[in-house]
Structures are given as structure tokens and as C-alpha cells.
Image (cartoon, rainbow, N blue to C red; front, side, top):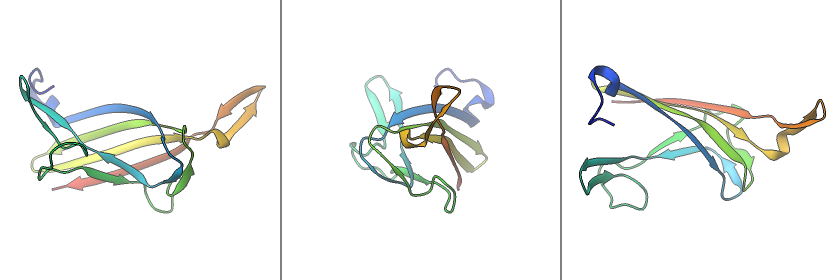
Amino acid sequence: DCATAEGSSTNSQQVQFQFQATKSGSFHGMAIWFTCALAPDVTLSTGPDDVVTHWNQTLLFTEPFKRAFALDVHAGDSIVGKLRWKAVEDTMWIQVFGKLKCERFSRVMDGVKRTLPVPFTRTVQLT
């Protein structure tokens, strides 16, 4: 919230996410966008269902040749993680750290069924 932020706290932010795949397919990454409240009843949004702006959405692909890249996910599989961004002068870094929790990667350990997460990460630099 930039209206209440103090000092350099606006230079680095993070948010946790959790959602479920709505369709089965190959996981290649995530699309991200933002909505900014500029004034009461005035927003700027770059979401896919909003009016197109020059800001657009950003695609964060998983790293090629890692286990999560192009992993088949099924509807209902859980995707959890953290999105972090940091601005330094005129450069911004965006990092995503996450885990795919797929039911088929479950194992019974000590009599308890546990889902073994598949980690993914990606860092991009925007200038």
C-alpha cells in the first residue's frame, strides 16, 4: 500500500500465492498483473479481462531443464509460492518461488499420505 508506506519499503515487496490448476496440461510458468488504486473509484489494472494498457501482463516461465518445466499438472493440483519484486534505481527484479503439489507425487510415509512438492523458481530483470 503505497499510501501508507514509509521510506524504502516501496522498493521491495512480496506476496504469497496459492491456487489450484483449473485444467490439466503442461506447466510452463505463470502470468502476473497488477491493479493499482489511484484514488477512490479510480484504478489502473493490467489484468487480462481489463482494458488494454501499455503495461500488459508479465509472463514468468519456469527455468528450462528443471523438474517443474513442462510438468503435467491435473485439474485440482495445487500451486503455492511467493512472488517478490525489488526496484533499484531504474531496474526492477521479479522473482517467483513456488511448489507444484501434485496428487500423483504422493507417498505414504509412516502411515501418512504426503504430497511431495516439485519446486520451481524464476528471476527476471526489467529495465
